[in-house]
Amino acid sequence: MGTLIAHAIHSATGEPVPCITRRKNHADILAERNLQLYDVINRKYHYIQVLPVHYSLAAKELSCSTVIVTVKSYDLQEALETASQIAISKDNVGILVNGLAGKKEANEYGLNPFFIVSDYGVTRISDYEYELRGYGELILGRDSPLRESSPECRLADLLSRGGLNSRCTSNISYYRWRKTASNAVINSITSILDAENIIVVENSWARNLAEKVLREIIDISYAKNVGLKYDDLSKYVFELARRTGRNISSTLQDLRTCKQTEIDSILGVLLEYSREAGINANTIEDLYILVRALEEGRLRCAERKQQSNTS
Image 1: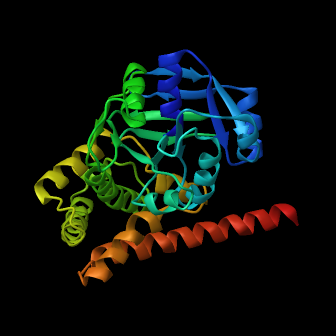
Image 2: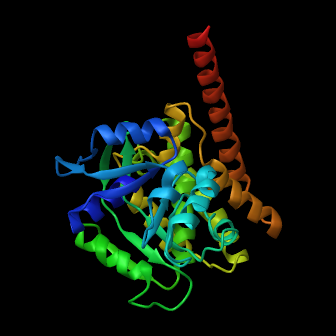
């Protein structure tokens, strides 16, 4: 998602976009070539000029009016520490991450973040190549009254000028829960079936499984005073699966490349909430176990390949 947002900022401003990377070799690759985003739907390439900086040098080289954190949930702590060092204000940090994490972690660094929820479909091809496989919406905000002068509203306006469908909200928790529900359904089912997002709609057994997960999430949301409604949520999730039908979910992308997934921040947190409230979430638990089993198998495979290559 960072590439998509960088594309919009570059399109709106015409200026190179500072890009902080976790890996040194990633920064080196981006220094040699532009980010590339291929719009699969419109069959159009976008080339994005970036200024790559390794996170270890960020505090020395950058001071940013707004910092947008788009990382894997397990890298969030490190990213927020860097953000706290380069943001000009504690209010000017935005977080786009799968699951419901972020607020507590940001507060540890004195940050008062806004959140970004996206239902665009983007698939990673390589360190510099990405594909846009489904259009959607970016929702930015906090759980507080809107101010047009706020960092999130200014950023939403910039992203809109850069070609993304973006808007602000004063109830971001609702949209974060709604997106987490869609991740819980789409990411887990597509990972287990090793298929594109559309399978959640087209396969009757997958759809039946998705409906069971959504009903459990509805119960959990009421216990957490969010109060999602089943009809609205199911309509959103199945429309999203259809609209991003050709996309490969981020969890499946991770499994295919033998990397750690974010299933703990998606299904794991829902299980934690269900246990706190004494709610039955057997379907969510079964999916969590299956995805973790796949993850463990892929990670062991990656370790064996690495050992074989070094022996």
